[in-house]
Image 1 (cartoon, rainbow, N blue to C red):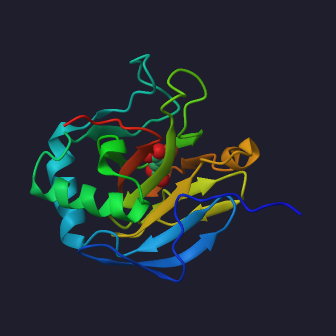
Image 2 (cartoon, rainbow, N blue to C red; image 1 turned 90 degrees about the vertical axis):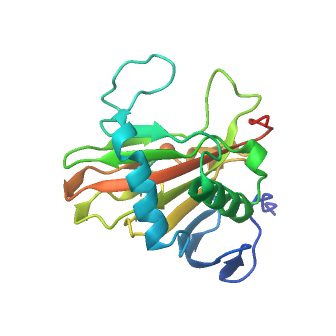
Length: 211
Ligand SMILES: O=C(O)CCC(=O)C(=O)O
Ligand SMILES: [Fe+2]
């Protein structure tokens, strides 16, 4: 019989209590583990993150090439680690939620998509380069409601998540069976109407921040 693989995230039930918020699990795929979460961020926090990011966006760049890319047509920015009270609060909550210490967290990233912009299917983990301290899990938080399009799509699973302000999708790719990791292929569908703002948190296997 196949043994179920260990997951990073091992909550039983439909609620996750962090120090300052009760998060709801409203949908779940078991292997690979993908969860749809509600009440991750308050609407005020979503608005604050957009406001803080707005004037600091750059056309997204992929990897180390520093070339503007067709893979990702959206814009992005990274916050400094714990750069203010709001970021610190959100980082702490995310770390409790993802069950990984803040020291393993990459800087929080904000993505902005205008109509027609998208992020083609990709893996969040590295397939070359720094695989020793690879990424192991992702939380994509939706900072606004998108009028049309902009779903987070998992093509290998034929599964998509509709953006909803304050909600998030969580997934992990820490499995011994690489086929499970490969099923986390995902992208952002083109925004058809309105705009889309997300905050992404990637966690590393080992320490990534030294304070
Ligand atoms: O915008 C999305 O829905 C997906 C974002 C994403 O894949 C990422 O930030 O790694
Ligand atoms: Fe991604």
